[in-house]
Length: 519
Image (tube, rainbow, N blue to C red; front, side, top):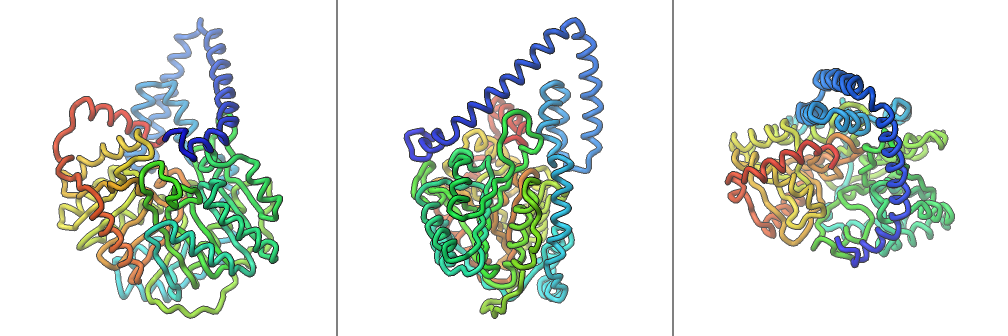
């Protein structure tokens, strides 16, 4: 992206100071380590032997982890080939789970929050009887993610992010008690300023407003003055895991969720952040394709819990919420639509890959078709096998990816997965108008997901994410029809990637896959 664009100028302006400070600190750390190694040059042989022994022990430890082979093998190869670099990267990134203190904090807040959700056993049993294959997935979410399935909820699907934003603004104007907003990225430009104007007016009316965003996700868009500005106008603001120079053991885990909750009655989630490009105010990568859903009714309760989890557990600086029940009181509501709605959250700290398990389960349960749309395609062997096996047994498996990438390096890795899929019958489409950032799956006209979870390692293993599982409701067909429209605007590259790649290209892409967890 050129710095001549509005985003480029803003990103340079807001990020340069922190980046320079971070780079200088890291260079100082590297220089210090080099000086130490130079002074220990006489002991180079012993140090090399120690490093290799430690690397072998670490490799055995990694091999014995309860983890997919796709997550273990790249680390094993890196550590054995480049012991010092591999061990360092693994200690900084591969441990993936933050510090013990952070993990304990999330466990503490979840122990308070999750029991406040209803069990809804009758709804679960009803879904199991009506649509067993969807009921099994719902049961998994209830048992392992701890988020129940609901009825009595009306859903609206937005095939463009700007439609979702316009609806959000109208709902926020009606807020009487509270507005909660949690987003990976916020840009202090036109789109956000429309939102802020409404939030300021609601604050003056006595509404409690909280805004929570990820520091790394927003680093190019805002600086820390943004949080202070919001606090100054009465909007409570917290920043997830602020970027600090040096080695941050929790840096690899970011908050990628996108949630808005209004009075506990109305909720929004989907793929879009609160920056201009998501709403096609600016066009750094052609047309931007993003989607979202609005829910009104009982299911909003789970979105409220997901927000409160991050708000309270993200920082030990702030005291825990004393009375969280006040935001979870049931409201009388009579839904017009039927169907089952199950919002859920995914955390990298609990060892359960909820997002990936839901996707693989939907693939395995598909009988007629299974369609995905994702901005990135960097998947494990297990998911590759599930997609391929579904296609082999006659399921129409399709994946839509961008026609114009936002990150060319990651785009190259994404395309490296095409051949292994298409030779087994999976069809690949690239959306030619621009960059598709939506994250959705639809299966057999009966179930679909919409949320923040990409088909890549970061979303599936490292980030805090959220999604919504929907069964036997109108939005399922809305999503299907939108995917049909999107595919009609795409170029199918299935046949193109059935051909073998050049040895040089294949080798380069395989090398990049070693660093897939870092991309």
